[in-house]
Length: 253
Image (cartoon, rainbow, N blue to C red):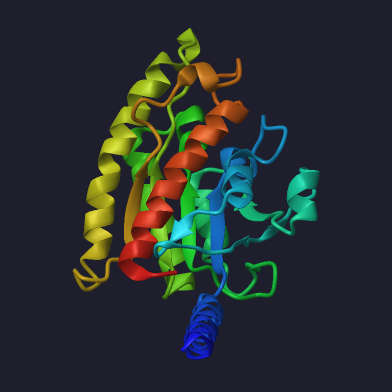
């Protein structure tokens, strides 16, 4: 009787192990492309901005831990920790506006995707800060954002795109008007996302929103009032993680 029970236990454990292996093999690495400007690149960070936060504690995707691979057009060796982890890829270009980013995203096939050339599963878009910093109105920046999202959706027909309501500028006097424009710009994003999702089945939307603005701790910005400190980037990483989880739960990765 005991021998039979032990044998049954071994069979059950073997089946469980086989199931675990097959399940793990079925979960491919989730490829994530951070897309935007210097905040995407991680200016002001000692470790790699929100990208470091994501790769050092990978998000739960679909209810299970899933490895993620950062991808993009930039092979960035600025942050050694990300280089060692082979996570030093992104599409953040300091100083670029939405229209400049849209032009690059639409430059097929010249726009590369490292490593491996495979498209991302999810694109994270935080863009528009430079438009506003350089004097664009909210409507102009929003129009450019829509063009950027269309360019990305054309390039990546199967990817899900999470667009951020951008973080605020700091409380410095020179940023008072800019912060008013940021609020107007962010308020236009839900309408843009709704309009673009109208081209997709309601059960399978392509565009999603991550709110980086509401209650963002502006004391976690550098004195320039533009770039987060590592505490601020950590906050962004938490919010991106929640959005990635929500998208993956709905549509997989």
